[in-house]
Image (tube, rainbow, N blue to C red; front, side, top):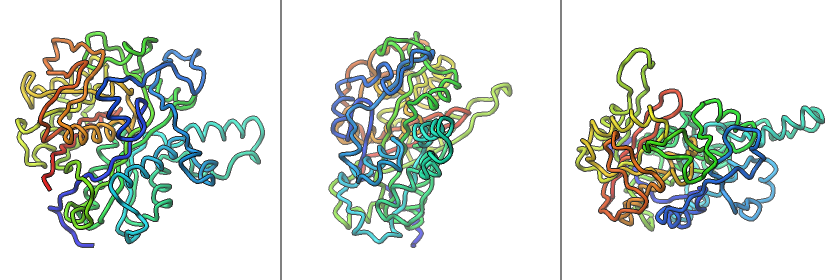
Length: 410
């Protein structure tokens, strides 16, 4: 493999599974119209839990989209990842069987792996005994299973891996994919997918103490709003086909959505130290990596924790870099819930669609508090010339990541 540290890494395919739409076209149409995918949990009875709302994906029939042999050995999250990869390949005009197997890699992010599968097998163990536990439990629950199953199904034997950094994971995975392409790998599938809407997963999500207990889907997740009181979890995410620009041009890729131009990552210091959180520095590193000035960014896709203290930190970081109301800010995940490792990957895919169509998606139902001094795109989408976007993500425990994506003139 030829090392090219200056290789331009671009997005040529999108595969999206979100609570408000399956496939990039369905998701983008719903998002532009401000369609919510948040509601009362249907996958189990949430009545005994303090939080009862989630962004769940409806209408996903894995049995119709995957070989039957894969169904008993995979969790819902892996089925979503496999199908989203198929969609991303189709969108990119890629037939993986036509690529040399060592020229393709997979780097995904996950926060939990196949929790629903694992819960079912643990229930079998407790109620029926070890003889009734599936042999597939050995890997179906594992957070790295999506990378493994994608690579096996598509014959991808190049550099692969998994990143575990909660909400920041989707961006961190894409950054790792960019490194591998610059080292000579021709194509990498990357992004994030999570699906932990089951009792076991729900208990883990509740442990963060950041979940909204509102029962009104339109008022439960309100990032940067004065009424913010926590977030709503969701399931899904996005997987992207990333390629070296020259390689994409050579094979005649049907489109190039944008270039992964810059990346920055930091970790917050302990709160008791009184030191500044690391998000601002992550933004500055990403801009410097991309060779962009703050004025070059046309929109920021914010993390949007909907926890007042975390929203304040993010708003201050954006304000210090771009100035008061200095750049349009949007939080489309207000329509889907926070998708754990899938969230930032979905925001990155959304940024690509915003660049393509010249539209900044809305942040429905949110009235931004004046104290944040943000130019938040509200209930309606905003037409704009989007040449460069910045995607921010913050993971539980102190992870901060930022990715700059810009238009790529072919």
